[in-house]
Length: 163
Image (cartoon, rainbow, N blue to C red; front, top):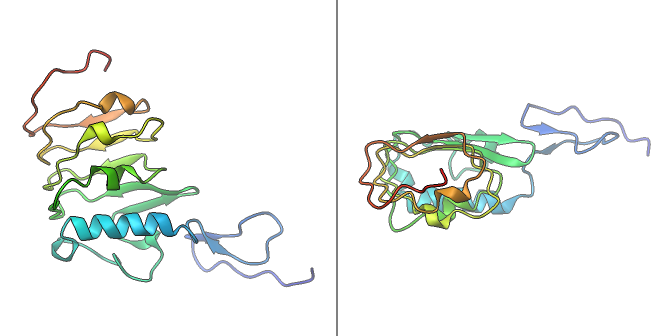
């Protein structure tokens, strides 16, 4: 077609492929990731977080405080010492972000159950010190793990031999 090119307004959008005449968000159309982030917000007392800029707004999820996106979607959640308080087990919710590489919830009351990690996950960095973590059972599913912070928790049980 002879349609003119549309200028992309910011770094959170790009042309979906060479020859495109319009822009779209890296995660536009990914209602799943937005729904997961909204569930994290709701189940960790988001209205009482210290910083919650843009959360649950109509803004692109990549502009929400602590959310970092890559080409595939949400790759990082950086919510250290931000007043998160889990109501129930939120492990599956956090771990359902398929492209998540770095999770930092250090210093929040969010005890994760690492047994709920999915095989083939992309986690490379996990900062969960002072969260109320009880066990590291299941951590071996995080085969890409390069950085692990688990201090100041109430860990019990054996340390996995294959770590």
